[in-house]
Length: 534
Image (cartoon, rainbow, N blue to C red; front, side, top):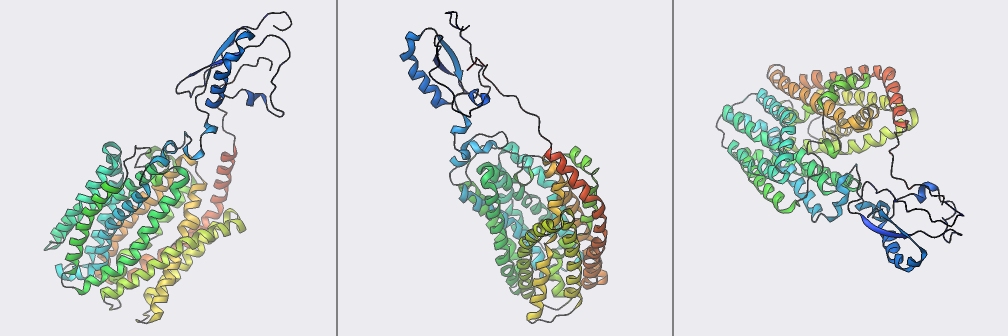
């Protein structure tokens, strides 16, 4: 009480719940009288109640002895580390535990290129089959349907076994599993090069594919381990850009093996051996880091794929529509049969057709950037309807361009390269400009990763695998030129009409999610210092 000559009894301040190790602080309780220290102007009571930082605690401890003659002292516990006193890149975060140590990981940039190297090798093992299938077909007396089977095996394996490998990596260590699946597993690719008939090729290639599908999900998890959230985007960008550049350069090189006797066998031998080397590179250059997020987390997010969430997401009208319309996005099949089409339908050599494929891939890479820019522009101009307009334009444009490219014989001059490049330039506008952003705008952030995995992984991956089988078997019956029309161009045109439904459902779903996002989150109670009239 004040004005009675009695001193207030000591009151212990509550301990901050995040304190790792309490620091004992001695603070003087002055006798009644005028206060010598007052809070700075404009400082709120809540600001005065914040936990003490280490620096403040040390200064108060040092000054405790100088006020011994001021009467009784009180003891309190100060928070040993105040987050504001730590650099942002190193500050601990409940959302991103990697931030506390990401900057201390040595050799992480070299690790990214090591992971890119492993992914590139695994990708080329499937790319070699697609590029050199005409010569493999001739060597082993296969039908075009065999390419459909091989492509379907790869897609089904990626869809089913990708999460399995990721779970094994979470349990037994990512570097160790990546070395086995990407490195040592390359010996099966070497063995596939010795295949003498279709059965041997199918069996050995299937076993090899079971391992190559492991690299992408595990590499994503390692990137999350090595980089904090502020740097992961650039790290993933380096990873993807390196892989795309390697594909653009490597595809024509693979095509040159078609002019070498048994060149496809030498290609499998080389890729299998390089795969083993890539495993050693991963062991040597990818740093050892403590696991932060599951490797099965799509894209390095903080949410695992959840079956229950996936089923409940289908109650959302937009998500249900996206799952249906993605089955008509059949361009993934085109990649597998591109070289074979130009060899069978237009009489090109495999090496020249591989160069044409690289031109298409170049346009495809640029298309992704173009789609992102156009998507933002259309959204600013037309609101929620903007991305629907862009998607319909993209679908119509790709349907028309594929009709012109595959139903018209462009010869072998510059015109065909221009036509292929323009088709590639249109090919990837839709996903980054509309599809991905629409999916993310109608579901809560906690289930965005599940929505992407459901639609772009399971649904589209499964449909692409089935279409590959159909494409291969029908190709033997009616030819690839007719298939390009009925299974690529027509589905895109139908999908463009189907997207008119989105004008009725998407704006409402997006607006509803925006309202949910704007709702204030419940306040989390924090420690406060009892008001003692200061």
